[in-house]
Image (cartoon, rainbow, N blue to C red):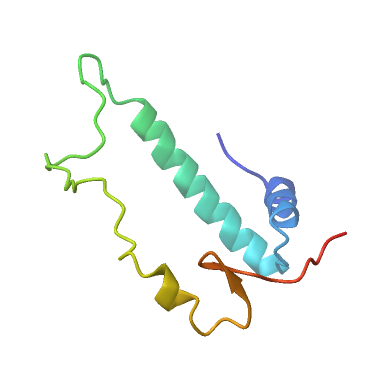
Length: 95
C-alpha cells in the first residue's frame, strides 16, 4: 500500500496542518516508509504466540485502596468566603 500526493494533502487537511509542496513530497515518502514497515510486520508469523502487554515481565505495583483525604475538610474551606458543612458555597452560574 502506498499513498499518493492527493492522499497526503487530504490527510494534512483532516489534521488541519498546512503543508507546502516540498513538505508533501517528504511526508509522502515518510508515510510510504511507515506503511512498508507495517506490511513487513503483517508478514511475521505469530501463530502460537500469546498476546502480551509488554516484552519484559513486570509486577504491577499495587497499593491498598483507601481514602486518604487527611480528614482536613475544615482546614481546606477555612479561608473560603462562604462555606457550609465543609463545602465551598458558590453563586449559581447557570439558570
